[in-house]
Image (cartoon, rainbow, N blue to C red; front, top):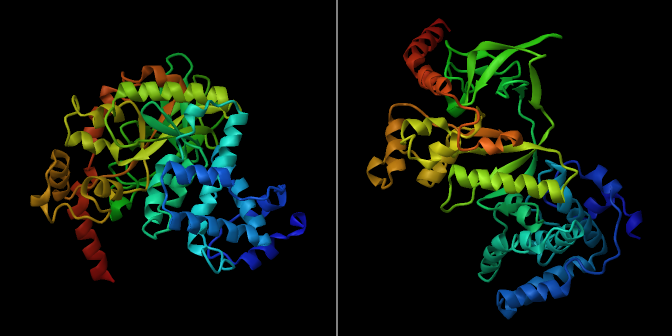
Length: 446
């Protein structure tokens, strides 16, 4: 019967409050299985014993699983969702899964999102076992979010916090290798990186048509615009050369274009290439040495167990990469600065919300308003910097795999890049008064 169920019939009967876009084509490729259980009962029993789950919570979860399994259409469609989710990350598929509730599930519907994630654990582990990945790499991966979720359930709270993030753990798609987490990622940002065939120097050239402020950040980031000093990125190419705006590895786009000869430079990273996204768990050891060790382990791990993925390097995005932090921290001693200088940093459209959250506890915090409340040196320095009218940014970074062995000696950033950064940073603020006068005059003309 399962093979006869049509996609539109399934979603009409299940009546989800949310479903990701683009599922229908995947559904048509899905090959149903005949397994009688969504979650093996021995797996559930093992979790109950491991975490000493109280009997009422055990019964709640078992009844929730049974409610899905007894509904033939919901059971069928849920197994399809599990099948897709378990391979999503390795396919670098950007399908956005998040909390969802089927309207057909009159009882226990609040459990559905968690049970959907929990149903991914066993098949995901089976896939890794089939690849001969040692259990030590993955058997503890789901435990991090699982423990917290089970504690919430004991207090009657079934909601899954940050579904897209914890899905990485329930599907065993993310791996902790030494100090950092790694997961496959498709590079889609609008620039190309080149490597010099002789010197091995690396340069990133921004694609055409993007507007930047005079400080080399995207115009409008943090709702701050540069009316006079803005410029638009260019790209001119023929059979012999490329002329475009260089991304300074200190994390900004240069106004003046840079020419390169194609016979001297080879593409090193292009749109569509596969990278490993790096994520930073809290704790000690955020150093260049641990960064290098982790990247070496990650490259070797994916080469051995996921050879079909052609890993070109590493990508990440964080407030920790904002090179403006080097203005308020000791660049010779701060691990934040020492680590970010091992990267090829580049600007994004993300403002300082991440820094406000990580440093001040709220993405909308106003550090200037309550300076007396701050206790750490980072909080005090960041608040003082923002009091001048300056703002922080979230930057992204790239490390190409050929440059892993150079980590610790600044593979991309030169002294000249740092000097140019100091000349360029916050240059748009010098124009703010002039911009205000221009805007006022235009308003008067209107």
